[in-house]
Length: 138
Image 1 (spheres, rainbow, N blue to C red):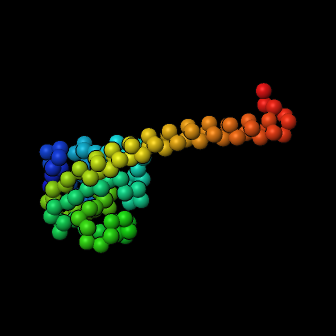
Image 2: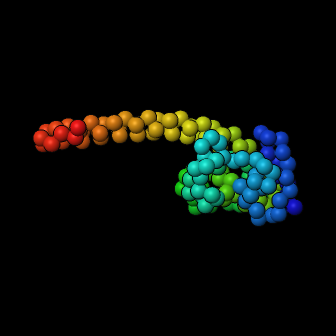
Image 3: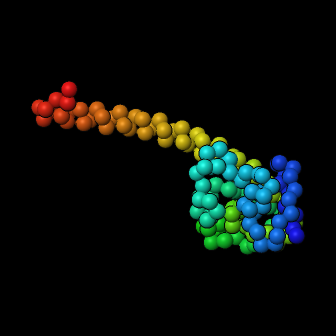
């Protein structure tokens, strides 16, 4: 059985050949999702792109899937943990996923703030419309 070494966490786990790196990480208790992506992910379908990792050697994992080629282009070293299937011993670096998680955390803060201001603006517009029509809200 191939051995997967998670470089940043210094954890090794043996998994059956053909298992995805996401399943190997779950078995080892390692998260391949950073920040809010632990909750906001596609659960392994390759659609969200939040489980970005690098794998060495890249010959010991399956070829990039359609979703990986779509997100990262041809010839990139970045892979999605949910799409990369193990064929031999590999070393996995999860730093990209953690960085992306922090980026998403900052984006969510901005979205929350924009949402609050949007709701306040909508309330002000509705109030002004009712005042213009002559039927005050209050």
